[in-house]
Amino acid sequence: MRTFLQNRRAVAGAVILMLYLLMATIGPILVPLGGQAPEEAFQPPSWKHPLGTDYLGRDVLAQIVHGSRDVLFVAFLAAIFAIAIAISVGILAGFKGGVVDQALMTLVNMMLTIPHLPVMMILAAVFRVRDPFSFASILALWMWAGLARAVRSQVLSLRERDFIEAAKLLKLGSFHIIFKEILPNIVPYVAINFVSMMRGAIVSSVAIMFLGLAPFSATNWGMMLNMATIQTGAIYIPQALPYVLSPLLAIMLLQLGGYFFASGLEEIFNPRLRAHE
Amino acid sequence: MAIVFKRLALALLTVVVVALVTFIVIQNVPGDPLYEWAMDMVQTSGLDFETAYKIAAQMYGYNPHEPLLHRLSTYVKRLLRGELGYSMIYRTSVNRIIAKALPWTVFVVSISLLLSFSLGVMLGTVIAWKRRSLLDPLVTGYASFTAATPDYVTAMLLLLFFAINLRWFPSKGAYDIGIKPGFNLTFIGNVLHHAALPILSYTLEALGGWALAMKGSAVSVLGEDYIMAAKARGLKERRIVTAYLARNSILPLITGLAISFGGMFGGSILIETIFNYPGMGWFFSQALMRKDYGMMQGLFLLTITATILANFLADILYAKLDPRVRLER
Image (cartoon, rainbow over all chains, first blue to last red; front, top):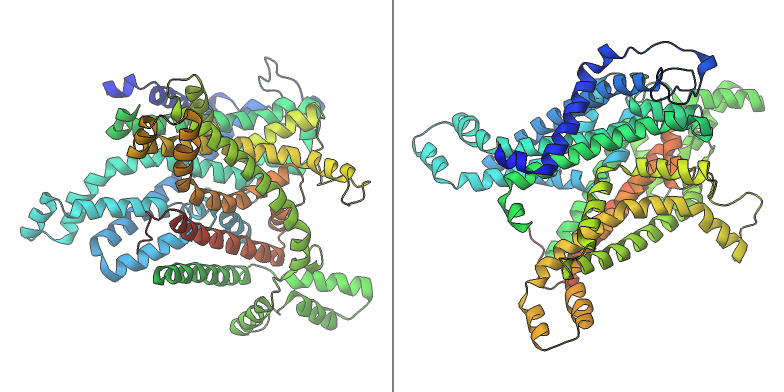
């Protein structure tokens, strides 16, 4: 804990992430969405509308706040799904070895060479995503491969360790070895990857929503960008600047927070990196 | 040599699997993609629906009412002839669209890659050599900033400020409509003017990453004996840095170069859409947004194939360039 508090990057990242978490959980209660008021379109920032209004005179701040819930929820689900796949595949490959290992690693290598964003976009377009769960599944399907490979190599090195040998000699079943001996040892490693996974999921999901391919709610940041850029062309109106900048800055700050937190954590848990600094 | 064939086999297998899966996924699209097209033809040319539908199926490459295996064999036959499919919204072959779009994307992506790579390598070498300089935290900070900012956010910011607000750069097209394409200064100047912001977004985004990668690689090379030996022989600083340090540290980055070439094609979807730049990415996003499955499939297959081959070449090239690296497995 002390090492954590001493790491300024990790603390700054954690504070930013906490703010976003608050915004996504209690924000929507504090800031109601409000209705349309076309005569108040593209208002500059004011006390009534701290971030101005959009092309229909709706409050931008409220949309950002309500949108954060969507964006974070989808990214959270996607990261959970991807980690579940990565752990299962990684442990299966590392523990079973042989043909299973070879087949799974061939699959992993194939998935790693395919550029992810176009695939996710095609899947979202073809299957017409309408809810956060199917959207998160599409994202997760292309996010697990790298982590699975890392988990596999962790399992391979764990397998040679004494306590696993001992468990095998004691004739404890594979089930016990996997869940009681191996899994607890890779949890910290996976936990660090969780934030990075969510970061990746946010970048991809907003990109997909930007193109209007996952229209399950009208207020998330990607849909705001889609509306402003592609649907209405509001970005070409100078007064619309606060409206367009808001979702962009919201993504940027969240990404920075996630990046600082993840790289800070890595410094703390990876002593080699700390020695390097 | 056997390992090269194994890698090639994996690359080809990936292409085949991707092509097959895309085919099956797109075959299961809800609705009949040919219906609207045939109705259109009925209205414009006065054909009866049956004939119009047949013509549409002929041009599209296959008829959705035939059995799946039959459609697959037609698709494969067309692919082997180099025909990537037919676009519903442009009513032309995907090959023609690619012939128009690909040069722009390759142009922008390769200039950006060249710029960001060479600048990044230079910066990385300098900050590795002079660890205590002010430049080091500056570059590192910049790199973490860009690593955290998605490329489309950078592109949007550039568009908002430099194209819309300041009007320094155009926000649309690859060159002005009034200008005749040709090999003259006006045209080249106009093309560069239009490509400037897309190039800038890629370059700003990738620069920091290259600098950090180069720094990491150069720092480990600095610990090698031959650097110490070069210093002991009293070689000039400049020579040590260029001939010993940079040349050896650059090798591990070559793989990344090929991979990011493929990655930039993926990134080009949003960047080209944001700047309305008529490259592969722009057409791909049009296909996605307007549900043009033929064009989607064709552009996707080409992009994927190019990326996978680039990865394969990078692996081979790396082993050739650096004799210490042996391809494993």
